[in-house]
Length: 304
Image (tube, rainbow, N blue to C red):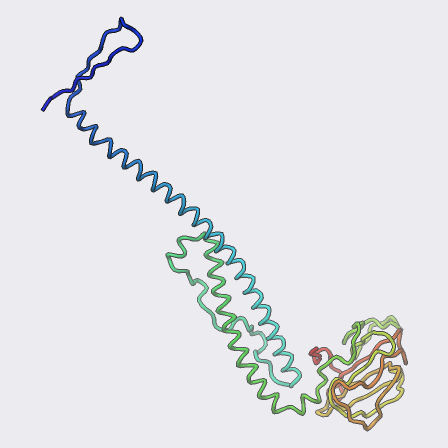
């Protein structure tokens, strides 16, 4: 085997230039022959690997964008569920007031504080490592919120089940409880202290004023017995209904009365029309709820 290879370089444009001859060791030629395919192969691999990584990064960015959008949507749904559960809890509380039952939670307790997972609960390592710290915290918070909603829903299911059983046994009380709005209109004055439109001094308002056009229907908020109809002082034309169980309702400033004393009425039955009689600054209904003769806030009893 030859130890050297001769390389001859012939000039192209000049006849004066001498032909040049070089000797290259044979082992160097064979080394380059082996190295070149390896270089080509490694270059192809690097290019393929780079392309694959670029494509993977693009797919990862797309998936990350989708996950973030799903996270935002899920957060909105969780907030909606929390709002709905709060409404259910409020309805539970109002029904218990109407039925004269103890609240489902004692004073100072929170329905959202029932049970719970550890505040330092963490995500699995393989998940947490692929997320920004704030995103991992948002997901952990979602898990925590969903856990609380689940706990609250079970609590309310139990509470409402108990309430349902009690209310069924107290149907006569419910039928006699003024639980619907007696007339449609604008609430111009609520229950409690106010400045009198007549004297300009602070006084206690014992009912709820609902303003509307003269002749707007007034309905019975519950079953009961009409015990008084007629004019009475500043109330003008007045109706008093005894619903039993110590509950009575009063309807003042009426323009017309459609019932008589001694008549039984049912919830939703028309009993009168809004007017401006008695001591009144304009057409409206003065509506009172009294428990054992003591005025209470009518809005505590209105469900619709």
